[in-house]
Image 1: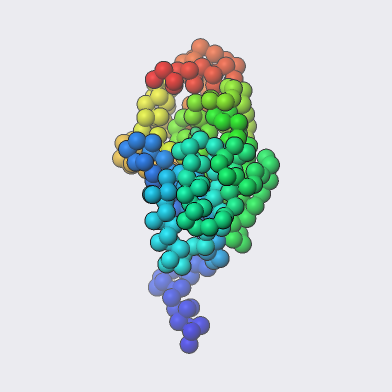
Image 2: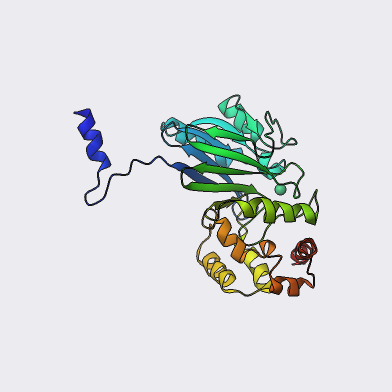
Length: 278
Ligand SMILES: [Zn+2]
């Protein structure tokens, strides 16, 4: 009886049943209207195991986590931090106070960190989600992007290293060479269909900068999307970033012309200086 009921529920008339397990990603916006940050809850649906990325503002994150836990949707296993800045790692203490002693996986300077994975080191969320730590020092020296895969679903959590449209936050602790390596060697080498989940919603402002550098069709399309949509996280892929993100187009003659440089690292440095002035 139970078996047939379960079976019936999985069949939608006219469609084949979908048994595939899926990684679930929920955005938790924080400081909307000022910092426009995102925390992300990554969960493995069959085991309900979950980890939360950059839960920096406990008053906005705790109610969401509590409701998911109380409704039996998740079992929270760890905090993941992309870098040590307060608006990313500053909520660790409050989250641990609320949910007990969880591992904190992040860069070496993150508050209360218990585990700093090496570059390329992997860990699991539940049974299927495989997460790889990608060291991308520049914005901070402890910046790590986390690449998560579940079958054909791929996502990368980039903190302040890569945003939609423009790469990278300010080079607080690093160099243009490091940012070039992070964006154009490490992140650019991920599969093109990897969805990008940055630490902030900056797309609308970012695309103005892109337009000032180069008015290509992909950039115009990004601008149109940002005009219509308040949230852009998880909507664009690494493949699309390579088309509309000027920081990932350092070899594009138009971007080189706009910066007056030809060497990739010089173009990167010039773009950041232009962006800082905007
Ligand atoms: Zn930061």
